Length: 107
Image (cartoon, rainbow, N blue to C red):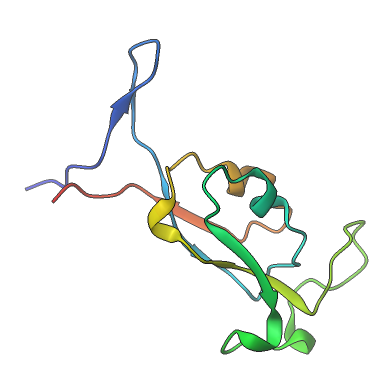
């Protein structure tokens, strides 16, 4: 039996399967806020890195100078994942590719 996923149609009538937020890699996140700003549903929140279990500001993967105004003391977290509409805009603006998305099975 194959999985059936939430699907819809575009305005032009094409089938579309949204990909919903599954996880966010906090170790890669630079706290730039781009995903927070682009999300229409307030799925994310910017928090102090020390408040997230398993993260340490000194253990970030990519803290080199890369042109982004990153704050190694802040990190984005999924705050309201159930409000995600599956647009994946957050992953399109993320310079560090922190977001993982996938289709949602119908029950």
